[in-house]
Length: 336
Image (cartoon, rainbow, N blue to C red; front, side, top):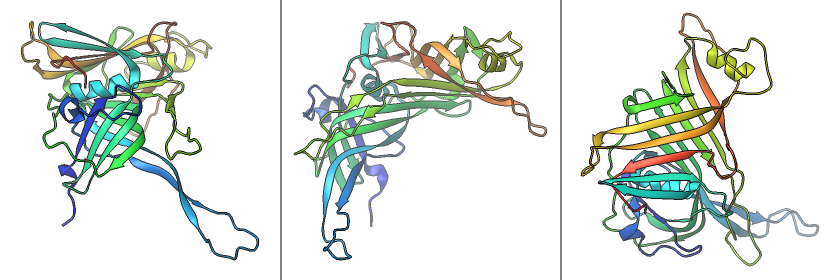
């Protein structure tokens, strides 16, 4: 009969101690609905090189060290997204006011970021894995004007155990979804008539710290954090093009110093948080204080209206501040 994918499940739980699976993942973890994706092994079959006197055929092989990685694709719901953002950024401050939980995520400069424990069930009985020491290597969010806020989380895990017992009744994140009609993009304090947006962050984890005497990586260390974003517009003037290519919107020839402006992306649900006073929507707000547009071309084609995909680089403003700040408002106080 085979195994249908929709019977599977993914649970996330912030890990307290490196190397120790969170035993309460089934009761305190969050069940995340995903469109697809799973973690797969990165492992080589170690085959010997040809040896003089050894004949023309391969005589033996062994399995090498291993880690697991992959992408999870999802429609963004605030409670499960909060767990991913905590693992990605490393620092979160939470506050409660009359039924509204505000979680503010900022980039940590620590040498280690939070680990996650995962429970991944494939099909109705095909296999269930427990993952220990999983990290969020990359996060991607995007939306179009006539679509949903969607995301992709790139994960790396140090250890996997197969044959785990799946949680019978996960605590699913069934929060409201967000669509493009409730999303705004503001650049330099001006609301941009954006047709779509994207946000990308990468922790660039080093995942090859294999050591003698072990199958597993010793540590997963984040390297330079990179944050980029972009939005699509219908060109109504050449001001942004001049800023991206020349450095300022008033320039008529190339300069060497680019303009840095604040970029703010705000996304909210139609529905209010139950019990909030005053009534408040679930929402996510991404703020990049120093954002530089990358050079691009004005492309004309036939009778098409000229539109451009603008992308740019986030820069760290000053020491002690965050390259980007993400604020989630929801009804759940504790991040799984």
